[in-house]
Image (cartoon, rainbow, N blue to C red; front, side):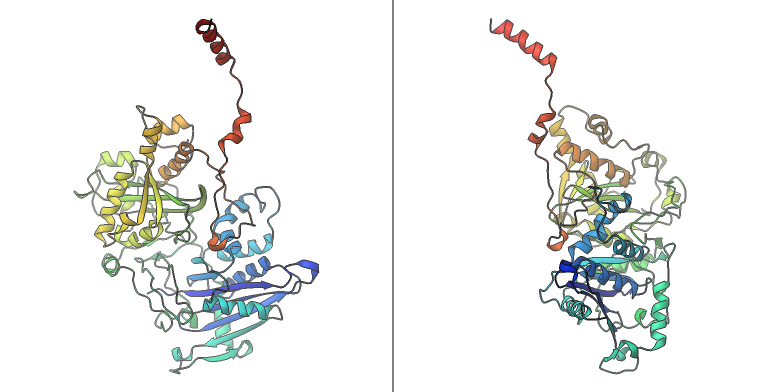
Length: 518
């Protein structure tokens, strides 16, 4: 089973940049799967708390092998929101905020962004100073960092020499071989994703350092780690007790042994040309971790494509596309996967969605991705057009792999029902709404699930009104607990000044008054 590194990071600053004498520190408490611990700390003489939080995360990434999945816990919503949400808009705007002011700490954000590319990182937020062991240790290291730099490597000798106790070693006592291996691993890069076997879902994690683990990785990452590194030993698991969330799902997946490519950074393969009418191995499945699952205003715009209309008579899902919004803003997260339905589709079905049997041959079966799709979607509001159809098929597919509570764990909003209330007696297909509302003008020659989800998101926002700007909010002052932010809706009365008097209406009113009130 694939293992991963857990890192806790924290920053500290006395004075926070005031009077040019604000010493600060950062710390990274890194826990490896075989039990080894790496504590690193440092600081600056005159700095800010946000800089220290960023440097703590950078330190964790710089000192862990890129080939091993990493779960990073920070108590800074500034760091977590920045790297998972705001950074996309910053990069598009040449590292400027939406008010065109330069992004603060841009050089550190750029370092963090570069280190994150091509890595499997699960960004998590933890409440600071709340008694969490890993966070408390990172806080202690950050306070040390305000006084000077240092490093302490704690080797778990039980993994190496049968010793029952770990031995603490200062940085200069770490073996040159181990340090060289770690440095080599840090320099490793992955230009393209490796082909992965079926997902091994990690959950119910327990360890001496992390008793309240929430989210595992939702794909089977590359197991071809550097065999010379002590920190990628897949044969030892002293500190992590990995139990599959759903044993039935994993057993079925192991039997299937389907191979497929997973996006390394939640972006599509730049070599993928979008062609689904033929075999096309360049497509990468995008299966993100549910980092925002518990955000109160999270909405998932969803669509599926299927082999037909009979979910109880053998038809299956062939594509799932999901767009994530929080507070009616696009987060940049999306889920997109094609699925081998284990049956041959006829030409009439293919004419609708344009997905050929040849294209689906090397794609995963639903059991292979069920847990990842389930984890991303549950505990959220699902918005779909003619939602009953999509929900029937999803329920059928999840029932087959034992995830039978899916329907009970989502709130469903049918955009077709909304359209029928707004425009009774009119055509309310997605195409008709696109024309009526003058949104979502993408080419819809074929009805792909992700494309339809993107269009539906625009249609839904237009129908429900009062929407805020679609750009990602990069307000650095939004440093709320848990990384959630409140949506700010524009009251309709603020648009009153845009109304202009109609000459035709005035003439009609005058004529009516002359006729009726004479």
